[in-house]
Length: 329
View (spheres, helix red, strand yellow):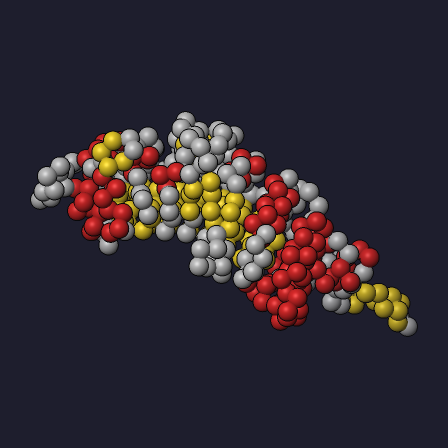
């Protein structure tokens, strides 16, 4: 018999006395860690239904650390509520967040469905503020279902309002440059997909976001990166994939970079060499990153950054570095 179910036996009275007979345990008799893991693996809608089993199970589903509201979750609600799906979706998410004790939620995944409401950014801000005091460590906010310029606006205080957040992935969102210096955040991994950074309403030179523990920064198809004021002295891995208005001079001060991967759009290739903090070429970049061991550049980026001021491309790599791995797509 498994050690998990050891001690779960049934006493059967016979003519010769009492005999112990093995049997399968009932659900309430399982160890707490087993019940906890079972409920944690259930979809949130199914897990919430366990509250109807008994009084002891009423709030057990709220003890799970992961709250996954993915596409499957919204599709279930859409089929159930039909034309009233929009209002019901917002009410149910409000209820799920309200019923979780604090701190409890460590991972929150929200794949936002197509919602026509114009106030959805305000509602999402309320959800994020609720999570800020809930010990959140991992966040995945996906707004890719709302296309055609319908970005989800998020305030830059998002970075400093989550003291325990270490991993964040945001898709199809919009940030405005901070109007004042934000506090430090504990992010170690940050992935931004199709994110737009807007300039502030008035000049804000010298204001930035502190990310002293950020080790991995992945930016894909983002716009307005020249407005991203992020200080990450511990950054080790940088991925820049087909971003608009890319300014590499902002990353010159990242002296701990060991892995850099850059793929450039043809539309923004001219800005690549002329950054806000001076001109950029391949030699300058490599000398600014003394710990660099891996460098992956696509053919367009390598050709443009490797050329001299007259546009002449050298036959050899402009600088020799030991342990440097260079590849192109």
